Image 1: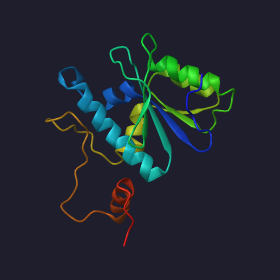
Image 2: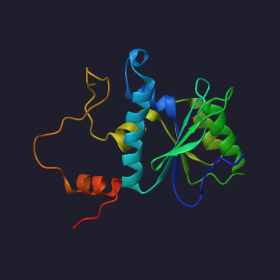
Image 3: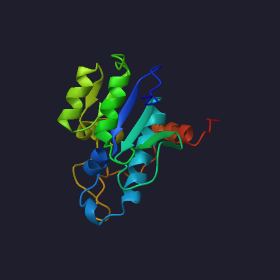
Image 4: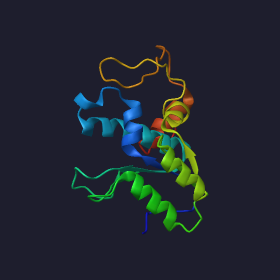
Length: 174
């Protein structure tokens, strides 16, 4: 299996629905496509700001979509009958022990044990949210959309945030 891992720099492989369900509460009544878009937007910001590669893997049982890149984000829907967990384990095993540049993001302990066994790092989805895509957020969810939101003051954006937005949209300073 060629899982598309570059092996040239740090890469995150994310169990998509695992992360999505940690970001949103009451996911049953919410449009899945909207939650995926919101999750992927956060991941694209993270990818640009950290200059790393991110692959998000979704169970593809109920979709006809396959692997494709969504903007700069590598997005994979598994084939019918294959779970994201299966795909991640297959990817790790295909790297012949050279998974040290990978970080697997999932709260599924089974996947985390496989990541460790194959030489990859792992991070629980909750930890990834708190430290990578929504650092400093308060533990309250927005009642309107169920998403964790950080309260911002009415002041100016910090230069780091401005730089991240400029990088995301391909603009340079000056």
